Image (cartoon, rainbow, N blue to C red; front, side, top):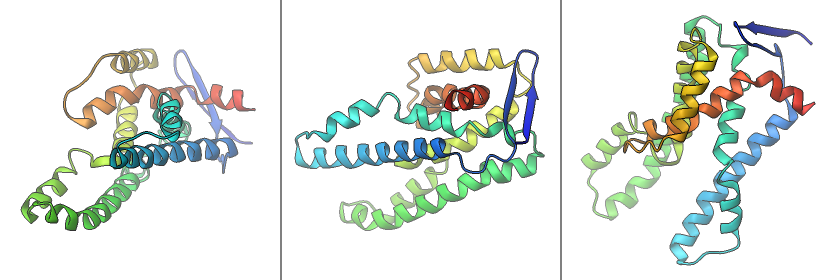
Amino acid sequence: MKTRNIRGKARMTTVAASPGRVGWVDFAKGFCIIFVVMMHSTLGVEAAAGSQGWMHHAVQFAKPFRMPDFFLISGLFLALVIDRPWLRYLDRKVVHFLYFYVLWMTIQFALKTPAWISEGQDLPGVARLYFLSFIEPFGTLWFIYILPLFFVVTRLLKPVPWQATLALAAVLEMLPVHSGWMLIDEFAARYVYFFAGYLFAANIFALSN
């Protein structure tokens, strides 16, 4: 198997140059998706019913690791593409995700608008909310919105010593960042996991063998 080595002053990350499908990574992504869907379904039903069921305990069990796992896995293969030309990099790691974000955001707005209007919202208000969603992530799609930001920031910070980036990301995760903007708050809380996936990919794959 061909490998690519990315050397820094104090680290070397080795990942497969053509990894294809990695079974445990696909399973891990699948479990994360199931737990996220389970959370929204369970909490929504509980809010409507006014009571909690046994699924509430499963949702609470997954809460500490559900999103950290997702972002760590998302960073595992970044070393394969981070040195590509900027235009190609942005096409694969920014345009790709923003396309799906805009697509699903538009679908959700199309489905939700009739209900919002029946509740008293006017069309200009819905339009303002739609365009605001290009700045502030819309509802459950925030994780798709924030991934391109993680990819761009990691590429820009590549010349910075990895120890400094990791330390800063860890501090941001520990700080009680509550700015009122989801993008800022979630970036502070989640970036350390994404960067750790990128940084320690070789170690993680070694543990999986």
